[in-house]
Image 1 (cartoon, helix red, strand yellow):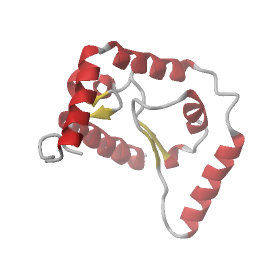
Image 2 (image 1 turned 30 degrees about the vertical axis):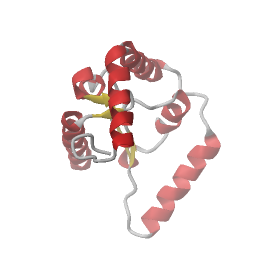
Image 3 (image 1 turned 60 degrees about the vertical axis):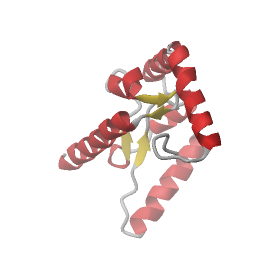
Image 4 (image 1 turned 90 degrees about the vertical axis):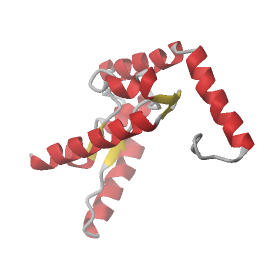
Length: 140
């Protein structure tokens, strides 16, 4: 949905409510920052091996079709278990953009639409960052 162009009054009301909830409770965004930092500090010796096996199978299947599959860990909505599994994905198949310590702009209020989503400015920054990280990784 796009608040600027939507004509659906229910969508507009919902989006305005989500924006206002974040503006009234910015500490919720800080909680996401802290969770991201905590994830980075969590030992990853215990992770979902069944899920990782499925990820490896997807990578192998993609390679057989000439596709380089890349998993992207986006900011704001990462649970600890997902983070732990993601650390086991081979680097050539993985981009981590979830780090609040590396990418604080992705967690800033001025780049936020609501608690879980970026606004237009944040989306533009995220897209630029995604391209830069992908290109940098492929130069190695």
